[in-house]
Image (tube, rainbow, N blue to C red; front, side):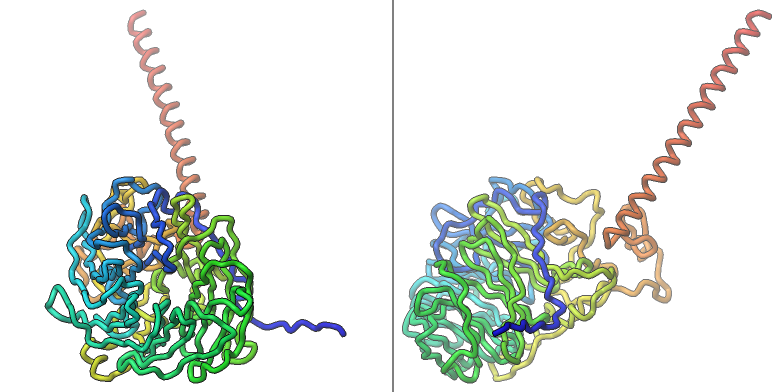
Length: 525
């Protein structure tokens, strides 16, 4: 019987992973040696945070995204936990606020300062002390401000309201205690009304995030789930785990019926945990294995076969953990649709990996950048607790469009004064956040304002100048071709100036010769 392959049209068929060059990586980073199955890394458009080794307690590093290269061995840490830090998550609505969970049974909320850091940072903003045992997971609510979920080894999920004046919060607003063992992962749906969890009993549960009631529970014995993920608005769940024969496996579920998975796929016989990442804008699923060097990616659809394997990024260096950049921090000029930050403990290295859609056109690709979740909450904590549900506030990634920012961005400073890769541990409030691979960010704060407004003043015009030129009349290069053209123009200008200098030198020599002749003639006379 002949086999006829079915070809499927997809604009993401040729997506490829591009690792950053060595100078655009983060070197000499003391990455944690903890055996806990977590990402150990959190990224936003300003900072990269990574759990590190620390004697006498737990700590993590917060590194400005543009400060690539070798890290100072005395770089200051964010420390204050009495036990190892097990999980860290940036606030999706505030790029300067981060939550950390620790073995000391507490969660701490940190307000990362914008000024220079010259010593270890220990002043946390809030402490959440409701768990009886160590806390393994924290998750921010995707649409409501100041709502945090935590899961501990006391088998409880706690819901915290941070919109209070208390610095130490002992009582959560809700405690969910339906689990019979350690909780391994948590995931919200798009509007945050549902919470999916996996437990050490290998069951998947779908909960009402506000009430804590169990809506669905998987009792399927053929798949032992470890991590679970909501797949955007598809009303489906994706879980990773192991099969009956201990093969690593991914399974797709209907969120309204967890009796039998829609599809299962065995990957390999390795033992490392599989971390799933889903991009709702492109419907792409990335599967990253702990201890592996590769990243598999699929395209997810509502119709069968649901999961379509694309290809995989391969590397010889295994990852201990991994972080990813929110969509608002990507470089759209290079058609970058996802960016990972790979923790390589064997080399003490953090390596950015960009997933790129190859396109010939240099214009903005509207089809691969639909409106995405921005940095503004759609609900307050009180509104969500009262029963309201709303989807995320969407923004466009088109360069120059109005981007929602959690705080006003710090003022730009000249590029010539930017920190070198090996500069000391500085979190400079005047530095422009740049992409981790050293490329120019896709938008500038000045571009948010209209270029020509009625009655604009000379002071406004001066604010547009960077290194002496107008960024609107002479914008910096965005593509490789523009960079080459600028390089050739500069070389032509250098050649012209050299010819002019040569001409001036010849004229000076002729003038000296004439003066010498005049002196000799005057002496003879």
